[in-house]
Length: 510
Image 1 (cartoon, helix red, strand yellow):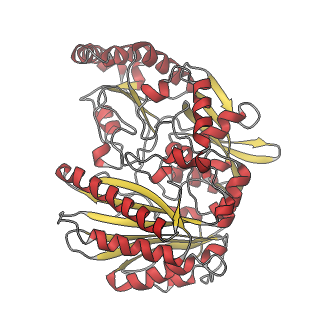
Image 2 (spheres, one colour):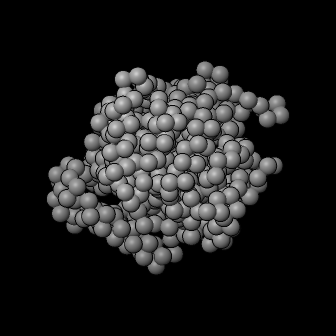
């Protein structure tokens, strides 16, 4: 089951903790002489005692485990929770001076150990960077949102003002990571990537300069940040284009093995770029097929969305409403976007998880081939109690690609290549002893999918960064292999010492 994660403000009493914190910090320094982490933690405490937490404290433990993937929960030397860009400026100065490794966490949704935490450095948790206010660009309202917010917090705040933005599709995902990886949204066929709808970034450079990055001030960096992940600096705020909010048609449903064939027909039919649902820019679906490793049973979870206040199922998504369900489907209309989003929170961090990404051309044949490979390979898995593997179909329509190309970003999908499906394969399981086995399985699964879709002329050369896995290299395929050299030049300009390449943790480096 899925459940919501809610964050609240954290308060650290300096009166009670002064001596224990100093003692612990000095102890950390003594126990980590090679990375000077104790020194950095001590200096951060001296500067900002109320913003630092150390092992064995309640606040530290709460922040440490704030990851969706249980395997991604590490044990940093200390955790720093800044509230302003100036706090980050000082923290980076200390970290660079002491050459201390650090990690940055927004929502903690990436299922890659070491992507947004660390065992041998400082974790900078973005939880208190929760600015949310309206500004204007020209006469148009702009939402200024902190990187520490979850998307449901943004949607709820804006809905009260009859506005929304292009953000995440799942309520509990953090603003920061999704926005820097591109970001898919239910409105993306009209507006492109979430990143394409960012009008300005507030960024702290490796050497402490606070920049307002937009198309006028720093056009090169502005371009690179759209899909460039955390390679260029620390983003504290995103200024997002808004648009008027209306009620929508949509919801979610579950199905078991008895409904899978009907669902797969709907998934394949949606790909018809002339007459299928993907041809309607108001429609979006996000179906996931799951294979239970221990019971060998199939099931599915599907999101259905249509941007209209209709009561009856629009033609573009009607076939999905005819799939047999387990329990009551919530697909209905008209209903609020916030109500819809509140059904999509990610589950808690009680499982170990992996993602891996590949893309295929948008066609029924591609869906059939991917699903065939998924079933054939999954049924060969050894028994893993409580383990699952999944395949998710994410449609990027021609209108999506056109909108993204017009906006301009480092991802730079080619409109002449047509629509595509960004495929995510995933797994969840309980025991660390199965980690290597399932990583090898997903790696092999994607390799087989690539080999066979290439042979069939159905492969699309794109790896969606937000869903990519350990060892994948999404940047190499950006812009038909032309974006990465430019991204590297921009990184050297704004981070000449390579702080965000060497000291900063992260799953995908340039």
